[in-house]
Length: 231
Image (cartoon, rainbow, N blue to C red):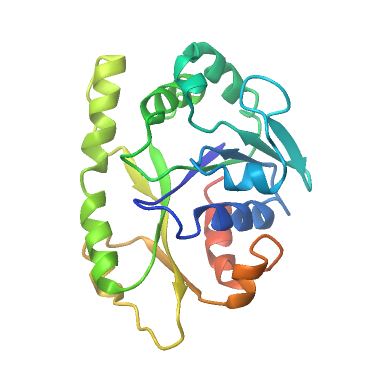
């Protein structure tokens, strides 16, 4: 099972859009489930999932892809962690779990969710795809803010599980979204932080903004091919 966390340090840069596009493409050959943890519940709301885990209809099949609303809330924070572990274990036989996350460091439920994930899958490596957006000054600032993520994860594991671990943050790829035709990304600037990580750019397109969940983003195909080798 390959778990993929779609992350950013700010909202509104296309995490939910990319989550769904990757899930659609991977589901052509693999069994995929989407976990919606975003604060806005973009995918859950778009596909009319109104109930919150663990009550009611908090999940729905979208073209044979289960979409599960595990969004952060006071209810989620008050849950026994065993319920969250039990929910995750329902998907252990899937090939891919893609998680649409809230912006890092602003997610009250992150710690509880991370420990539930580890207990469910015995998986300590936080495999992630950060989403960035131009200009280069913002990309550089965002990359620098991501540097403490490994220590952040390590502190959570030490606090909850009693041991310290290293090399937890594992960026599988980096996506730069909404790149205009006239803009030239400084790839070397990104590689200062993550030298060998695959970098994908997605061009700005008004058609995507109008209908983000019903388009085909061919720029993601190399990433899908690479992720398939990890499953």
